[in-house]
Amino acid sequence: MPKIHAASVADHRSQQRAALLDAAREVLAEGDASKVTFAEVARRTGLARNSVYKYFPDRGHLLTEVVREAAPRWTERIRAALAAAGDSPEERVAAHVTAQLEMVRDGEHRVARATADAQDAAALRAGADEAHRALLDPLVDALRELGDDDPLMTARLLQGFVNAATTALEAGAAYDAVTDRTVRLAVAALRGLSSR
Amino acid sequence: MPKIHAASVADHRSQQRAALLDAAREVLAEGDASKVTFAEVARRTGLARNSVYKYFPDRGHLLTEVVREAAPRWTERIRAALAAAGDSPEERVAAHVTAQLEMVRDGEHRVARATADAQDAAALRAGADEAHRALLDPLVDALRELGDDDPLMTARLLQGFVNAATTALEAGAAYDAVTDRTVRLAVAALRGLSSR
DNA sequence: GAAGATGGCGACGCAGCGTCCCTAAGTGGG
DNA sequence: CCCACTTAGGGACGCTGCGTCGCCATCTTC
Image 1 (cartoon, chains in turn yellow, red, brown, cyan):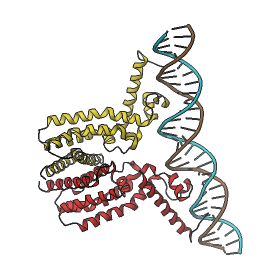
Image 2: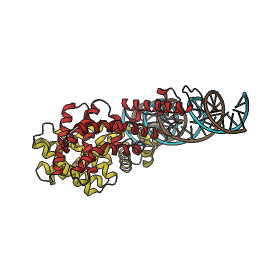
Image 3: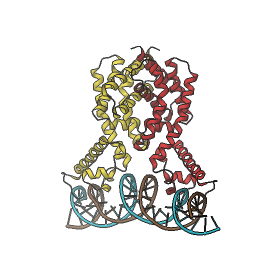
């Protein structure tokens, strides 16, 4: 193992792996998943492209790992927002939506977007499903308390609002207007559901 | 111009072009946009891959054309459903959602899906934007009548429901349950909006 | 300190995209 | 009627990205 700068090979390996994941996350944040190529990630870490294969068997595993690693932060932020919000389901849904759109505004959303609609096909699906579940969990809890008989499905549909809002924001729509409207619609949908 | 079987070259050209579009639509219906490759489309029409470039300058234009061609049928079906529905905005939104999910159930949705969220990036965006607008127009009209101050934005958000429902259906969720819930949520969201 | 394990990487093969350029067959002007 | 012009078809090439094979050099372990 040439050019080892860490104390041990094991250390070196985990450092390199982390560096590769950092680079991949960076590229993903700058553009979309298609930009995450072994060549680019290797370039940013100073490795040869082929060496990346020593850490990730293929592109899919690299992307999956990025998503799996990033999801907890995302989920955590939602959970924090929910903790700060009131107890009513309406407030919790509003917090769920607002927290995500804030992250979109701050440019932290590409990973979640890749997670959420996973159009990057099979490559992402594996890790994405799991991460997506975690993302929705708080919302699912709120809906269950409301007496929803299929809270997961409802959460998925409401998440569709967030995805659409994200698309609008990316297209340059005004943040406040989009957020306000999205929260209003989501809360209204929720009320209609519970009053049935 | 070798191997011309039509009356004139002009006829032949439009026939070949149509055949290529048919093949592209076929491939798209069978899988996702990434499967639509010049090689595959050429193979299905009996042409050499390079010859496809005589009809479409690049992959993006081919896909755009497929979308542009398919969108009117989709829009027409929604319009017909709206015509058959009652006059109330609730009924119209319900019809809008139901009509689309029916088409998903019938497997006609891949093109629309490519249109709707256009994750196939720049390639699709061009034609997709236009088609997407047409898709939402009836819904936008209904919302405008309701006094919505930004009906297009609201329509886009509601369409997020449809996209999420489509994803659920593709993942194998029961059609009736998904449709019922989606319609209920959309109508509820609408009510909340208008009663504000 | 020698044998084995393993990181780094050059070379290769494959698929898809798009370009260059030749060819052969219709078309239109003289 | 024929010849110059246009143009569909397609072979060959270059580029990018993916993934594999095999060599070398260095670390580890006994």
